[in-house]
Length: 223
Image (cartoon, rainbow, N blue to C red; front, top):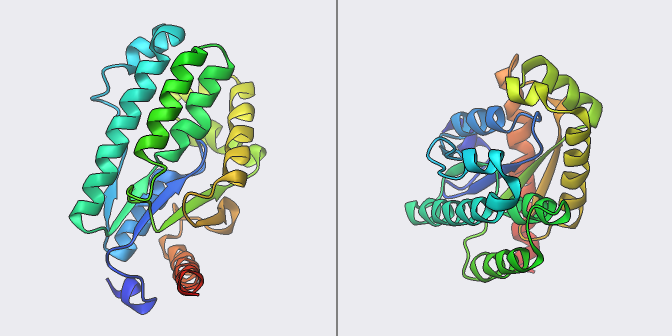
């Protein structure tokens, strides 16, 4: 509460954290929410009825999985804004279409008809003036070398066993996506500029940057 008031961040602000595996989205989400006295919103994986099926048969279940993610993220976004904001969100709804659905299509795991159906549904639900977009998307940026090192040090066992080529491709897809993203304002943070695991107080300079960025964005909107 103190830092939120100190830097004049409105209590209805909604911030989404984005970035590839290994950049520390969950840590940033929890630390930022604690510092601002905001709620957190995390992806619900355990209740997903398609994940196991998907990993056993990509081609059969990729479309079903992406539709399920789209529906769940849409409901969560609606819930956040109906609650009145004041949330830090781990992962955005935009990454699903800009990165994962596109990757499944390009790799042949999703047919062209299914991909077009998914994109049309996404655009109808999300890319409209009626959808409650976040006030800010924070993109956690890092070199592929830094990300691979983090995955090897503290990644999940499944992530550590995943071929390096996959992470290299995912890193490039994320960079391509964020470089053309314009659905809401974006603040890029380099993961080497802070260390929330060992120094939780390093969140304050980040909050200062968020505050400045939000104020500048508001000024541009008012012009």
